Image 1 (cartoon, rainbow, N blue to C red):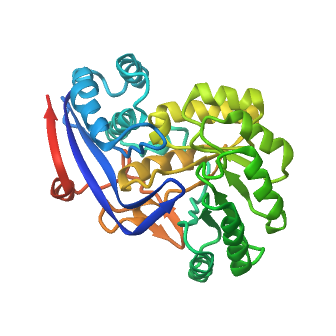
Image 2 (cartoon, one colour):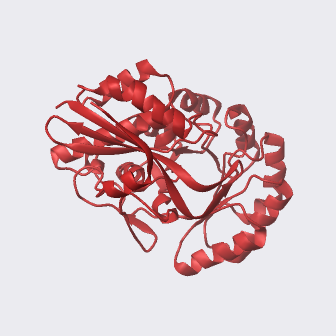
Image 3 (tube, rainbow, N blue to C red):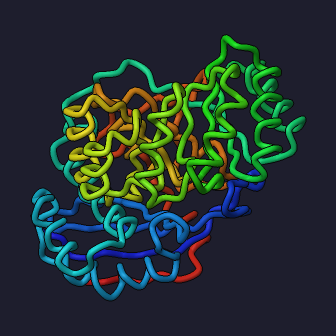
Length: 369
């Protein structure tokens, strides 16, 4: 089987309401969709959701990388030969993980369709029975975050994740307000998205919220401060998760050697797709580190890919595949019931991609053949 064409669509997906994290406020999010076609008639869809604050990629740079570099180099390649596909992409550019992820996801979609299997079965089959998703709450005033958290619990959510990373004093108020609103039976995850910057600030905050029983603190320091993260882990009893600071094997090795984290947040857009994500899961499992699969807030396409990975691997105890719940428009439909994501058993990613919506939302597109 050979890749005969790759069509690239540069789009923006609108959100139901602004998504506010420590480093930015989003009213819509970029999504670059790729459609990979083979000589045997199989079509696979992939997606890149770049974040300039995390991967160093923009929507424009990702589109250009796919159009001018990656897509032309992959024409004639066999999508089943994932090791070669990634080697070829890595030889062209060292980083650009979300651009590579788009190709990777499309290849898995093709492999699944060609073999008649959903992607999770290609990864070892379903280990987990369910995929529970949390309610994720943006940085807002403490009272509003508490209100949204209480409302989410009333709707049936079983765990809450809140974004912090602004003024540390107000962040303490946010965490306490949410904990008071939901009680102590509901797991509460806190994500600072690098906003507390240093180990010293983080430790001051954590000291003040020790009695809030948070499930874990995620990426409190700047992404490349793995030494600082290790110091936090040594000085607090609260589990520490690394997110923006973990991209691929290089950072994973440092996290293990420095014993810098209890947990890792794997995102397909940070590591380059499912194939490299599997390597991170294996390394984490050997080191006794728990895994979560997170999201850059992705459409049904990349969300399904992350869900297939989450379903298949024992070491992945948590997922945050919530993107489709946050968009007012999407390229496909995933099923959420009782705050669980229900994957299809259809071949490939199992998403009926609506190309009409892609073409409607595309600000530009190109066919490479």
